Image 1 (cartoon, one colour):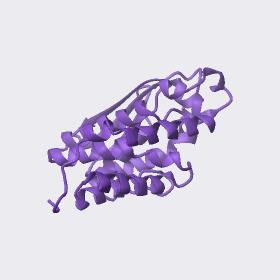
Image 2 (image 1 turned 30 degrees about the vertical axis):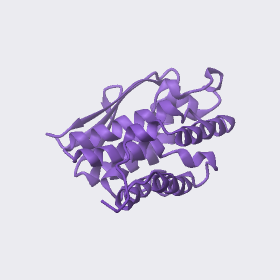
Image 3 (image 1 turned 120 degrees about the vertical axis):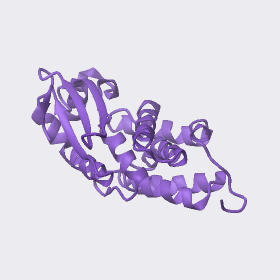
Amino acid sequence: MDDNKKIITYKDIKQSPEVRAYIKQADISLAALGLTEHSFAHVTKCAEVAGKLLQDLDYEPRKVELAKIAAFMHDIGNVINRVDHAQSGAMMAFWILDKMGMPYEETAMIINAIGNHDEGTAYPVNAIAAAVIIADKSDVRRSRVRDKKTIFSDIHDRVNYAVEKAELIMNKEDKEIVLNLKIDTSISSVMDYFEIFLQRMLLCRKAANFFGLDFKLNINDSEQA
């Protein structure tokens, strides 16, 4: 370990008043823009999913912990602006983690992952980044919609609200990760889903390929990809 550096845990990050303040204000900003929930429910779910992915793939416990930290912090850049939030979030994470005393090598992996999670510029450059990508892009659910009145005027809200159930399943024997969705097609068509999420699903495929796995999407018991 680097001299004078400390082991920073996922619990430390979750309880950090600084990190929590940035996540809270970032979500307030996104609410003003009319975007779906990006607050503690989203980042906590992402952390749990990213950590479980690496755990199921037999990565060492510390790498699992770093994935959870990166996933919890991945959207803090929205506090500055939605545009280029992955890159600004990576810079913010660097200053926070360096100040907390995290070893340089670990900080580097985390900011690398955060800077590569947005579909406009993302790439699964390491295992943590790949796990964060899959966790983030698979978080589609009804509870992310802030106002039911917008579901027929905003396609993002409509698609999220239509999802009655979402389940990400790792199948190591078949070497695949499957996102199973149950969608109420009276609210949103499958085509609406692909209009919004196609780029994200293609990114999930790249992330799964990083682990030597296929990514498959199953909507209403019908394989889509």
